[in-house]
Every structure is written in structure tokens, then in C-alpha cells.
Length: 144
Image 1 (cartoon, helix red, strand yellow):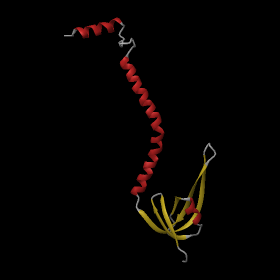
Image 2 (cartoon, helix red, strand yellow):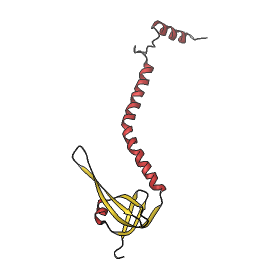
Image 3 (cartoon, one colour):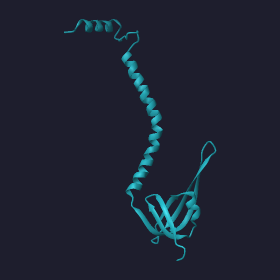
Image 4 (cartoon, one colour):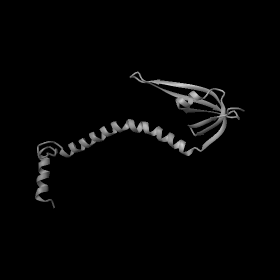
């Protein structure tokens, strides 16, 4: 059985054509709150999405490095290159890469710091220390 309060609420909804009126005469106060939360969620998603898009590759790379064993092997520097990237504000960045070749003919290209790249010359022989895609060092053999 419905109480008097419930019957009055139902009659009010029926009289207003099915629209629920709030205390200040606004249609669907509950809908307004829901819409407000939807807007807040959309703003958070728009703000957070670029961070998530950038974080996923970084997490994958860190996972790859963490799972890879740290290795050291005899190698020869066979190539060096620098990749230049510019931004709209006119500034630019440089990434340095060195290709190492092992005695069995296998090659690996690793990103290195600019100072480290400047110290290496094509033809240098020594011990390469690396872990997955991460360069840890190269110890040059002075005399062979």
C-alpha cells in the first residue's frame, strides 16, 4: 500500500506529463547531477588520455629492459648516426645511435648519450655492455 507522501509524488509526476520537478522547478534534478558527473568524467578522460598514451610505450620498454639479461660481448663499432627532431617552437633534439657488430656477424643498434657517441669511432673494438635495448657501456681495447 502506498503512503500519502508517495501518492502525492506520483500525482505530481502524472500532472506534469511524466517530468519530475525539483524543489526549484527544474526538470530532472537527478539528471542534472548525472550530467554533471558525466562532464567531470569526460574532462578527466580528456586530460588523462595524453598521459596514458605516452605512458604505455614507456612501461612496455621498461618491462622489456627488466626482462632482458645484462650481457657483455666482444664487438666492433661499425656505424654511427644522429637523428634530429625539431619541434614547432624551433628547438630540436638529437638522438645518437651506434651499431655494433659481434664476431659471429650479428649486429645491434643501440641509442647512446651524445658524449658517449662522440668518444666512439667506427672501427673501435672492445667489450660492449648492454641490456635489451639499453646501452650500458663500451670498453675499448687499446691494442689488439
